[in-house]
Image: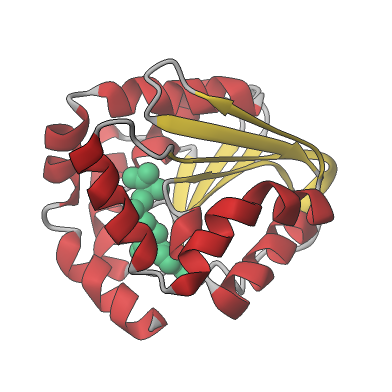
Length: 209
Ligand SMILES: C[S@@+](CC[C@H](N)C(=O)[O-])C[C@H]1O[C@@H](n2cnc3c(N)ncnc32)[C@H](O)[C@@H]1O
C-alpha cells in the first residue's frame, strides 16, 4: 500500500500545485499562514513539516523562522523535487528537504520545537500511523508542539460525498481515524485542542508533547 501511495504521489507531483490552486481558490495560502501562526513558531525555532509534499507549508513556515530551520520530510521523491525547485528559485537558506517515511524519521530525539502536518495525517494508517505519532513525540523537544490540519467534513452534499469517498478509500480504518483522532492524540500528547477554521472547511488540531 505504501509503495502504491509513493508511486501515486510521484506521478501526482506534476499536477499537485495546480490542482490545489484550482480547488482552494487561494484559501490554501491563508490556511497555511493560519497553521503557522497557531503552531507558535518563532524566529530561532527548528521546525519539521511532516509529509511536506511540494513544500507549500514549509515555505510559509520559513517566513516565521528567519534565524532557524525548517525541514520538510516526505517519502515521494517527485513531490520533494518540486519542493526543492521552489526553494532554489527563491534562494532560501533556511529550508531543507529530506526523503523519509513518516514512520521512520531520521532525526535525533528532542530536536524540534514544532512539528506540523498539513492535509496528510489521513494518509497515515495502520502501523505507519502509530509509528508516525510516536516518532513525532520522540523528535519534539520537551516543550514542543504538534499541529495538524485536515479537511473538516464538508456541509455541501456533493463535496461531502467526495470527502467520504476519500475517507472510505482508506478502508474501514478511515472512519475510525476520524471518530477517534482526538482520543488517539490525547493518549500520546497533552493539551490537545481542535478548532475549525473560519472558512469552515478545515480543522486544526494542536497539542503539546
Ligand atoms: C495530500 S499531500 C499533502 C502535501 C502537503 N503537506 C500540503 O499540505 O500540500 C500528502 C503528502 O503526504 C506524503 N506521504 C504520504 N504518506 C507518507 C508517508 N508514510 N511518509 C512520508 N510522506 C508521506 C505524500 O507523498 C504527499 O506528499
